[in-house]
Every structure is written in structure tokens, then in C-alpha cells.
Length: 556
Image (cartoon, rainbow, N blue to C red; front, side, top):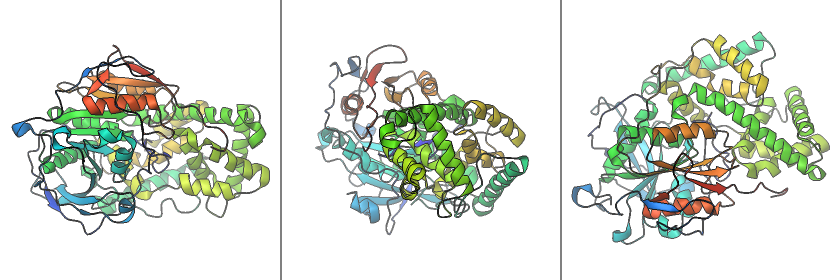
């Protein structure tokens, strides 16, 4: 389970290859008739903070050090500014993207298999918020990604353009894209469109027979993916996506790209930096995946971290017992929460929301504590007033899962590295985790269970991330982030020694930049780096510190 960034962190759920040489393939382009924005991220509040100049002090942290690169514009064949006559053929966006003010869309044809560049091709959906600064101030193409695997990146371009300091955003061609298999890219991977329809079997198996039902469900899903997309599945790894990113770079005709990503997107960045270190100009990694735990161990660590976030939610609700009337201690609120879960298990609401759907909805509070007031009110209304309407609204806004995202999630993570193939191993592990971290243990096991039966077996070990030859990289990380836990983010930091990390003390949200409400300290480091390349100067693994955004108040 990984997840991706949005202003509510609710559209996404989970998430976060093989070695490759340089491709040398020039991407061809197909023009799309119309693209619909898939809403990977909803509109962020614009930041009014200004970029921090090199050498000055940023609030809440150490002084910002020297620039990480040598200025904005390379010369000659090393140009980073796209030529106006580049090979990409843009057209007007439609649907949600047009409503968000994104004006330029296209499709880019890329090889299905980069070992056979002349063979079958697939298409990536791209959009762009173009730079508006004078050419002399422009800093090139910045690819952006919200995470996943499976998260649509099309709405991310507008998110970033609105969330950065206007003067900084104006200097970049901000490019969103749907990775292979996702959303508006072609094909859009879907194995069983009805997989999440109706009330699903209880995540927590009450007997071996109940567990077998869920095992069979995972087997059937994996088999359906093979039947419908067996030709695509071997080519859905993170390394394939990194090569796609380089095809986007080549289509723009630039020597280097900038990259800004969240959650699983940070692993895409790590893989790209490993395969193409000389093509990275600047890179921002927010909420950083542990590359040493890809992917089974990473998911186990998430179980423990989400337990901590759920307990923090219970404690927050208890502090406002006069509002929610669910208990004055975290233990009492937890008991109330499980009482609601058991009621929904026995009597689902509207034949739609049972125990699993309840879990999925409240899981999103782990990603973003700004959801806590709405979740607490829904729980209170259901238990104290017998009114399920608020709970239904929370589920529809936060808990509903997208099957395309789920299909891509499995296709990527199951193929990136081999998973345990004996489900008795999974059962034993999950029972151990459940004893200490019950909230997400079984939920997460079943979300990944198809990997035990996946038709593509990845390598025995994940790709080794390497940091040689890279420019300075900015990492942003909360100490209590449940989807990408802090200890694992520091493993990524060790693998990329040119990176500098801004640590948000007590930050539990998944995604520390572009927050709502904004974290001005984080935004200063972000805008400063993207403006000048300036990085925090303090040595070690914690290069700067920022305070977390305060927890919400009831009704906020």
C-alpha cells in the first residue's frame, strides 16, 4: 500500500526493475482527440511564500547552502529549454483539465518493450502548464508525479503550478503525465471493473474457510489480469516507467529534466536517477519510499505506522469528547470505532458500506489529518444518532477505490520484485503484525495478495538505487508519515548521498509540501531549491527541520 498526494490525500490509496542502459530511441507522437482529467490531485492552495535565496536562513531550520547546480540555462547541445518546434504536438485539453485551466494536452507513443524499440507501442497521456517567464529565466521541463502506483498525474501539473510561488512556477514547463496503464494513457489497465462493487468479504478472516474465500478472490484477480493484459504485464515495472520518463525528456529535446514527486513517485525518481544520472537537473522527493524494502517489507512497515496514526486519531477525537461524544480517552474512542465496524459487518449501510469499506474510509485519515473532523463527525452521527448519511458521504468522498489504480498498483509492485509465493507465509506474517498493529494488517495483506499469484515474477531483489553522479536533491519527510515511514526515507537518503532532507517534526501527513493549510517553512525550502538550487547546509541525515502544521480543530 502506498498512496499519492492530493489536497485531501484521498483519491489515491497505495503504494509505494530491472537494470537498463540508455535507450537512444526518439519518441514518436500521436495526437489525442480529447483528454479527460482523472483527478489525481485536487486544487491546492497557492503558496504566498517566496523563494529563499542561497546563503540566507530559512525559518525553522539551518541556513540554506550553496546552489546545487550551475545556473538556469545550459548552452549548446546541453540546452534544458524546449525548442518551440519540438516533436510534441499539443492540443486543447478537455473535461476536468480544461476546467482546471490546463490548456495543453497530447499523447506520446513509447515502446512497450524498450529492448525492442521498433516493436509494439503504447501511449502516455501528457499535459503541460507552460513557463511564462522570459526565456532567459526559464529552467526547463519539470515532470511531476503524485504517486501510486496507479495515480493519475494529469491534474498534478495544475496543482504544482498553483502551489509553488508564482515566480518559481513561471520558470518551468510543468508537465503532468499518466504513467503506462494509468487513466488516459493507452491502454488503461483494468482487470475486473466490478472488483470493488458491493459489500466485500471481511478483511479480517474469522476462519480458515473465510480466509480461503479471500485467497481465491486474489487468485481470480491475478488470473483476470493475465487473461486480459498478459502482453502488457511484463512491461509494467518501475524501470519501464523511468524509461518512459526519459522518452518524455527526449520528446521535448532537452538534455536534462527536473522532477517533483510524492510517495511512490519518489521511488520512480530514485529509479530514474539510478538509470539516467546524467539527465537529472533538479529533483524534489516528498514522502520518500524506502528502496531497500521494495515491496513486501515496505508494506509491513506501513502496517505499524498506520496503527500509530489511527491511535493519534483516536486520541484527537477523545480531546473533543464534548463535540463528538465518543469517549474521553483514546481507548474509549477505539472501542466505539470497533463497535461501529462490527455493526456495519452485520448490517451494511445501503448494501454498500460494510466493514471493509469502513476501514478504507478511515484509512484516509492516516494520510491526512485534515480529514479527522469529518470522519469523527460521521462516526458520531452513526453511533450516537443512528444517522448513516455522513458516513456514506465520507465513504463516497474518501473510501471508494478505483479499479484502474488497483490494477496498475498490482502490475507494478508485483513485477518490480518477486513476492512470497506461499500464502501460508503471508498468513503467518500477518497474524504476527495483527497482534501489534490490527488496524491495517489484514487490509493491507489482501490489497497485495494478488502478488502471491501474479503471472509475472520479478527479480529476487529490488533494483539497487545508486547515487553516483547526481546533482543535489531535495527530500521532504514527516517523522510520523505512515505510508512512507521516516526510517525508510532515511534509507533512501543514504542511497542518494547528494540529497538533503528537510524533516518535519511530528508531521504525520503523507505529503509535506503543497499542504492545506500551507507549511510555510517547507514551502520556503521547496521554492528556494527550485528557484536557485539552494539546499539546506546542515550536515548528516537531518539537514533542516520544520515544525508540523497543527492538528485541525473540530468543524475544520
